[in-house]
Length: 185
Image (cartoon, rainbow, N blue to C red; front, side, top):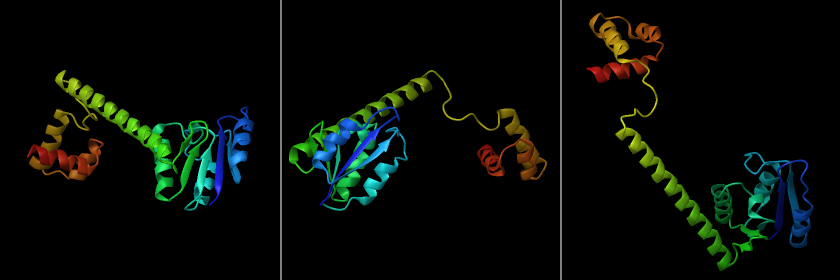
């Protein structure tokens, strides 16, 4: 049951001293990422730590924001650790998922993140509905306008031209043309 620390700073100019000092007091080993943004998907130190952790181990960070930039990112990482039976500790925020209180704090953060996602979704849906009410067309612009559709329909259905040739002429995929023609029938 190893206690593994993870330290990170975003730029080469920043120093890890404070994090390393705190982590070395409680960890068996510490892995670091120097000059790597928290929003970066590829954090070599973090990836190696996550791969090395075994059931019963504990991942320890100095502060939550050292592990990830967003609540969603943090929650995903910590939930994955939990499924692998790996505990998590944040020294500054005093979160320890091995304790009931630490799990409570973590679940409150997760609930707030879910609440925030729901609010964003509600606002997005309300905005889309308001746009529809104003008569705005939503989504991608049609690949063919009404005149082009009538002309393509006439060429393929009435005159018997090859659909692939007509699709090429209008710079659309043959399946796109077929879908439009099917709707017109």
